[in-house]
Length: 157
View 1 (cartoon, rainbow, N blue to C red):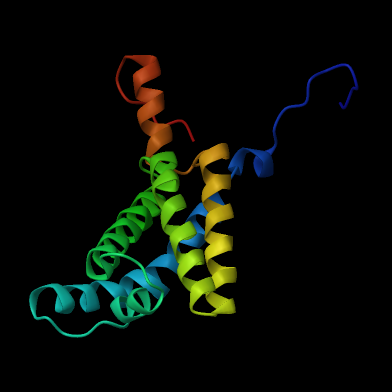
View 2 (view 1 turned 180 degrees about the vertical axis):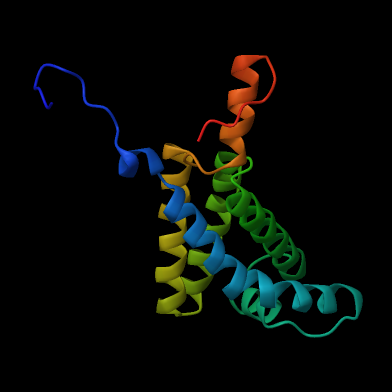
């Protein structure tokens, strides 16, 4: 029964935390950025083929555009995998913060309002995931349970 004097217990919705946001953002990153960006990065690195991201960074006046483009592709790939699995979730969120700010800077310099909005959204998604953690559906929770118990791994869902 509900009482004003008893502390509230988190329900199923409160226990999910940032899980839907983390997984949803990871899927969007995977299908919109990583899936198409990794082959282009590979071709630019090994075969010297032109890549639109390098040209965009050059137009924005960023230093070392090829290095920044490859570093961005690598960071976004690591963040996507980390968020999908829920592994080192907060570290991945902190890794994405400078990438999102850099993307906002590049988009604002090249007058790309849609890209600016998207980079601001990724920035705030990263802040949210960094603050609230991965949620219960993650590898981080399983490792935390194992380290707390010090015994055999138990799966308590």
